[in-house]
Amino acid sequence: MIKIKLIREVIGKDLIKEYEEKYGTPEKLKKIFEETEDMKLELDYDEWKYFITHPEETLEQTHIIYDYKGLSAIDLELLDTIKNTKPKSLSEIAKSMKKDVSSIQRHVAKLKDNGFIELKEGNINNMKTPFFNYDKIEIAM
Image 1 (cartoon, rainbow, N blue to C red):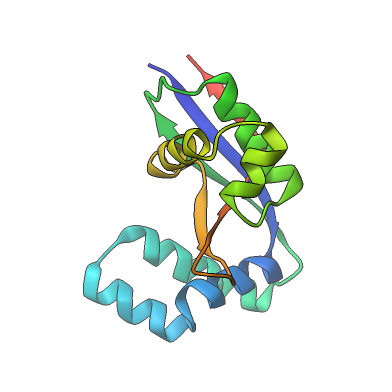
Image 2: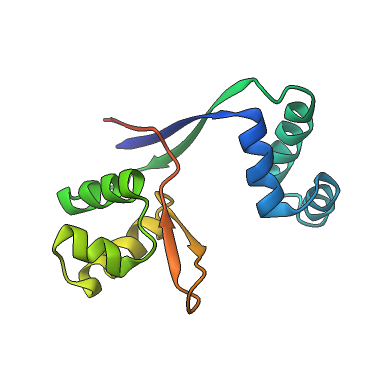
């Protein structure tokens, strides 16, 4: 079995900003959790409440992906490009990597579907902006 661990360190005040963008307020998040009983939401709520009183503390967050076998050299280059150049669009990525946009779209879709990246709403023409929010990747077999 292949286990891929995505790791990032985040400061409490930055995590609070992320949660505000994602959920609005702690009360809204708590209500969503109570309606869905999604344990991930409960963890987010608990972290949020903790970091309100400890905004300078650092947290190491991990996201684990099991049995993912399709991480190619292009996928790794794409993750590196997204992380380090912070492109505004898929077209910008394709241009910087000297690849066809349709090829980049397929790889981005695969990475998103498998939890490696997020797509955020852009400012222009509802363009999606890819976002890789981890500091390192560990692969174990």
